[in-house]
Picture 1: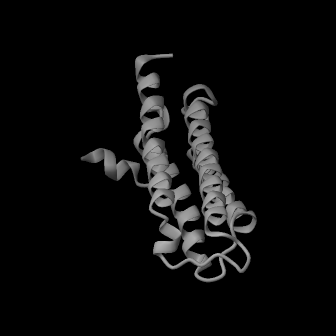
Picture 2 (picture 1 turned 90 degrees about the horizontal axis):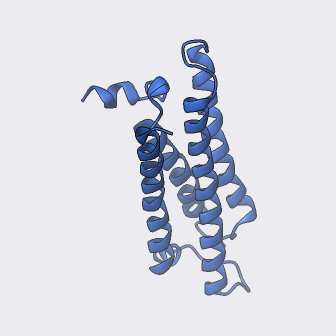
Amino acid sequence: MTKRTVADLMLIIAVYAVYWSCIYLATSYNLPQQLQVVPPQGVEETDFLLNFNYWSLVVMGISLLSAFGWYVLGAWGPKAYSTALGTWILIWFMGLALALAAGFMAIWLGPQAGEKAYVLAAFYLVAAALFYYLATMLFSPVNIKYVVPGSKLFRRW
């Protein structure tokens, strides 16, 4: 592994540390209750919050694994010059789909809200997609750093 690879992997971890911090703050300050998400009848607030924390961490972990998978395939997988651009874009979208699938899994299997369930759904889906996108756009291997949508524009600056 080169120094650049180690630095990129550490920076991906740093991006996901920010994600973890968002989850920590959301559970510490009881964000669902602040946004008027009501647990269903018979479910205590603490159980609801613990379940929300658990599923948020599951979504974060799967999104992180998707970002690492993207990096590993880009660095040590098929060579960029011998693989079509469309194939790389498909691989990137498959990672995004996996992160979003984790969000949908949390929506269906995670805490069910009595009211305003869309707030939890938005938290799971937006955070999974956003942090996957940021990690792959900012810290992709050199040979595929322009594959991620928007990375050409960002790297021009």
